[in-house]
Image (cartoon, rainbow, N blue to C red; front, side, top):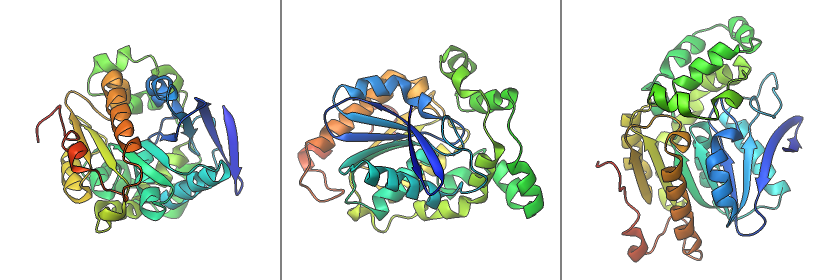
Length: 298
């Protein structure tokens, strides 16, 4: 792992691949770059891949505060600027998707495409299981919230959290990446996230969709952490250029259905590579015809 520091906070990142356009991969809350292990090797054959560890997780710092959407987005933007990365494809899951869509909205000149897997917004969180910790922590006075910030999750809690990401016990037991993900993480990162959920409400509305680069969404239809039903409503507003619905799949489809998700990402990025020169969000009609959901009917 390499490191990047900005304003006293250090990110960790893994880099693979030497040629081609840059791809930056952003994990969900509670995990790390490890979730992208099946995709990194495949993408590195054609792209320069950067898989980040966000603050609070993996090899990154665990600061006392700063676990907000704005802070994460600014850290990633600074990382892109420091590495002189433009025309970036952002691939995210949950929190990583929220960061990716926020950057695409605020800095469309930096982003050529977004793959948003299970996008975290206020509505997708509050209609999923995340609503429970969100309601609890939102109601806590600051001293109690700070006490939670100082608690480090034990391995059994981390493993239970990770189990909830999978649609089936079998998929969880057979996943080779559970062990490195379940070492535990500071509760402050998750508590800080759910206390900031109101900031994610902006991602439920997309009046500026025409200014965005091409977007592909991927949802696990059996996602319990976030609501796939709310995700369908979100898609009507976001109007992704490609939408995939994977049945028998939960919050980590890149692990549960690794070959299929890898294929979706590589196909979509190849198509957006071919459409450089078009305005953000515009896909030629002959190519757009092939970019619809092929797996689970609407």
